[in-house]
Image (cartoon, rainbow, N blue to C red; front, side, top):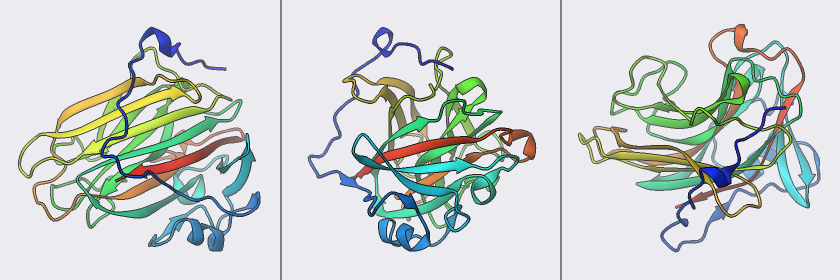
Length: 264
């Protein structure tokens, strides 16, 4: 089992969710069990598409008295439809937003080469999967697990270095653990058009502890060149991949997601 380097050695207290507005939790309603399209539509209204729900990859469970989504990653497959799950949940246009959730990787999780974790996005197109950001069509900011439980932020922005985005590696000593609840927080601030002053910050901590570790901080991003769009969606995507089956898991693997919230 991989371990997370003790946070107390390198932790910084993450700032409070600013603005004084109420945090909106994504409701996960109903009894534990199958999480079909009808239940998904009730909890995630307004989504234009989904992957992995109708395929049966998502279920609702309870742990420590709270509901969670469990995603079972399909052996030998990649991508949100065939391996995991994904959808884009509208949250309204914002200049700054902070996403928080808990994630727990199951014991024996097959990291392989890597896979996606939820984040934030905005714009008229789904800017991911090799569709580069050009400043007018949108942006995306997700997280990834990588080989041996390493981590990174995975971004599509105006100045991304290649077709498949930009990768901001977590500190070298970081590893996602298995069988432990983690608290994830991602804060994105849009740039002024034609200025490289967009921001992303990411903190990860062990759920129940007071301190989080800042694992990514970047303040020179150009998410957009126009004011037409901002942050407008919670990009709930989680799957192995990667563009080919060398990223696919070879053994049963799952992760649990809970306490999903976006602060306006």
